[in-house]
Length: 435
Image 1 (tube, rainbow, N blue to C red):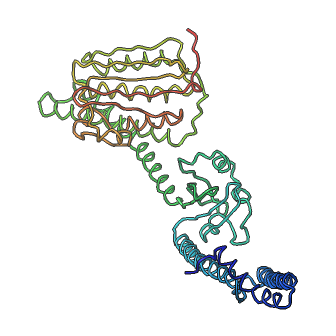
Image 2: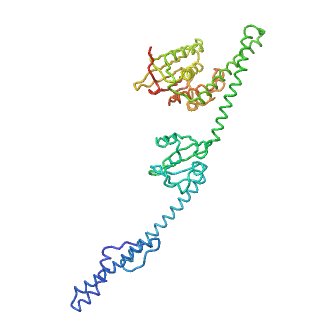
Image 3: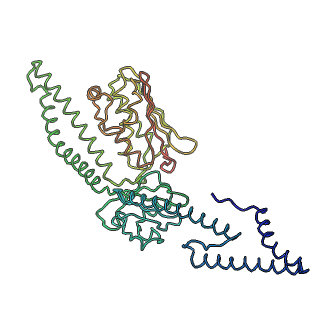
């Protein structure tokens, strides 16, 4: 390992060089002149090697540094070893970059890296196919020159990348892409795009299937209910087996009819463009109606209380808000044992938002089920849910309605003690209703 020369070593080398000049000057009685000539020679020697170094730096930097002796040998040797370390490091980095690019090319997604100023740093081949980039021709160009969707530009400029974003491919309008943006390194970002066209098509097929089946079932169910009601007026034999069969058919037909109606409601929520400002809904009047319906459903088996402030209003469609409120209240009725307490409350907070809650004294829900309650058709206990008339769609409908208000359903539950379902409507979606 080369060691850096010390000041003492340099002085010793200078003395050794000047010693012959001193000896000559001593015997010729011109010591100062001889030392002056020696100093001039040292300066010329250093200047010569300095010119060699400058010439090498400017014209032959990739080659090895020139050779020399003395102090300049130490300088050139130090440069040579630094050069070797630099080349070794550069080769290692080149290998890493090559591996990164090979790995990125093998990804099933489009990947690009861009700077803080949105200029393209790198992209893989799928980014060229899906997003229309050309590599390396487009390096240094702004990515918003290629991805011009207003919605995408808003997402890009907002710099809130917690959720993925969906947009149409600029290359093929029939291709739907889902993108995620994440920090790559200082002042750099990574954009990953995935083709979700097939997934969207399957989702649409599922929606169409549910909608079509629901519509097709509605007519025969209506006919069946009509005939069962006619038969219930005394046109069936009074034998126990016929009475039992009629009762079971009526109950199952009513349950299927309710399920179809909820499926149609959910399909409508998923497909239609919801306009929050479509109207003003009187919360007190709506909740009073829901409470009356809940009491009818309860048939006097529960104690249902309502506490709601006057003048509260929510912007939106009455039918959808009614669906959200009623599903929460009716669920409390269905899953609270006879004699239980159900408290419905709606009030205005200090920040202007409206908070709604339904609290019951039912059996409660185990903690492991809480995160999945808003999934469609999810039931905590299949048999118990069927017996109570539940379809597993109610909370899914509530979730879709609340998404239009940027709100989420909050659930607190304790086994054997009951549950509380609540949500908050932000001030921007509220209004005042005159009495």
